[in-house]
Amino acid sequence: MSGPQRIGRQVATIAGKALGKNGLAFGGLLTEWATIVGPRLADQTTPLKLAFPKGRRDEAVLHLRVSSPVALLLQHEEPQVLERINAFFGWRAVVRLKLVHGGPALKPSAPARPLRRLSAEEETAIAGRTAEVPDPDLRDALERLGRAVHGSAPR
Image (cartoon, rainbow, N blue to C red; front, side, top):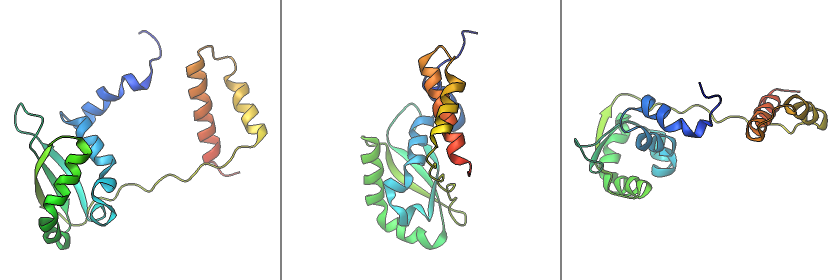
């Protein structure tokens, strides 16, 4: 084992395994879905799968879980939705939507609460605990982690 590695070097490998062969493209679509289609459609739809033709990286079919009331609306707005999706990707990635009726859309988890401001004593304690870490990048990461842990806990 070569020791600690930067997580950024492993994200593609981890995300690729978790999200399948189209992992990063589909992962970006999932995380930015509300931005791409707007809150009205994002509340009623969930991307399920991005299916590219064999050996291609364009002209995919995007499978969407939709609630029944929004299916008709989405059929009429499909050209605009496809335009927004392809603008997000920067190329003609998706050519068709396949609507899967399956009840309400899956809701993303609630956003995290904002972190509270740490006291000077808490900041000093965190810096003291990480002072002996020789690698500056690791020390900075540990300090950020310490701030996140302390900042999310109530006083």
